Length: 297
Image (cartoon, rainbow, N blue to C red):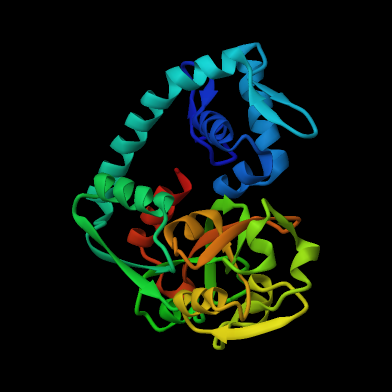
């Protein structure tokens, strides 16, 4: 380890952290999201990339104010590096699991839908830790943090934002454009998209307590308050009857297809995003191992 705590391989002069940063950046093509996944600042991502490019002697990434893309050399490095890095990570995970006893059952909560990225993380976690099983538990839409607090689950995947001092905000993932669910008879139903300003004209379904007020406001940011619901299905029912509209991310909308509801993309709203959270006082190596699996997607 160097004095900064990052792994170094002196014989060849490169650092594992630089390679990890490059691999994540190649997936995200976004410096901010790369920093979130690696728990470092955006400037640190830039620093690690520059260091790797200096060691190699050529640019790996094109970066403009609007777009990030790999150079041809970056594409080649990605193709060569990914299999080797995955094999190295798997070997370390197996060794860590054996040494630290990542065993038993991990109870994992989710809201509404266990999306493809979450299922992928579960598969990667169980492959790396064959002595540990994962139990998926649906938690109420209107109580995103309660199951973690009362110990019903060991960790939960919840919608951001999260401002709970007793809980850990783990890796943030699955950033998705938002859609609005409306009745097929609604004026929005025939449109290819709507704007955030358009939503000001319709009531939006909100979560009922005990969801915190800041969290409820984020899920229904319009000025007109709609019905408060405890489950996602209740919200979709209100949308189907035309009483209100419901904001959902694209994967959740695709999963909950209904003939009486249509989903219209929304422009001008922040992307929906998920985070893995757990209780600070009940953090275990098993939970940390699953967080690494999520961050590695």
